[in-house]
Image 1 (tube, one colour):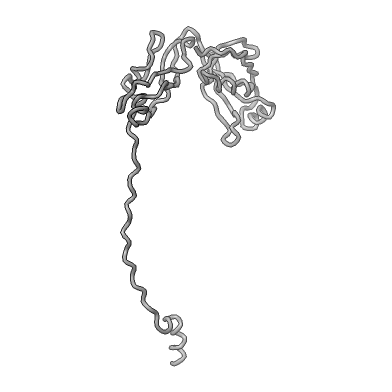
Image 2 (cartoon, helix red, strand yellow):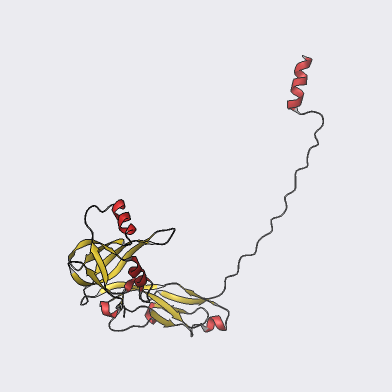
Length: 225
């Protein structure tokens, strides 16, 4: 389950202009700007502690983690991180979007797929394991969201595949992707194409230059006239 044990995330409502300068002031104060929406309520611009958000994103359930959001003046609400932006050079969080969650309503999320074991096609037949799909979209109640889905690939032989239909299924989870899609397969190692040596082209014979060039001869010709 993706329910967080992290203490409630405190969100302080922001007011005034919501431009780049205002966002910089929020970050200079040690917070990051965020927007909270969902559950049929109005969107609220807030500021939150980036350290707590980073802990959530780096947790086992990652952005699928459901946590308590304490919005000053509005009380506690269950929420998830649905979008986030990093500064490209230093990697600092710049902004996040938070969504209020109704615990009694099914929702769609993407969860990672983890491959367990070494396939026999790799160990005994010289193949390589390729994971084609790393996340699948599912629909379930918030309390049933798994942190990841494990699939055992030890029995995979050369040219065999694991499909979405082979992932762990339960009555509480509905897969939204085509069940026939390939998640992973064992294939032969691709050999790099041999380089074809280009045949040497016959070099044009160099014409020996005799006497002066046209440019050098031109002044002399002019002098004779």
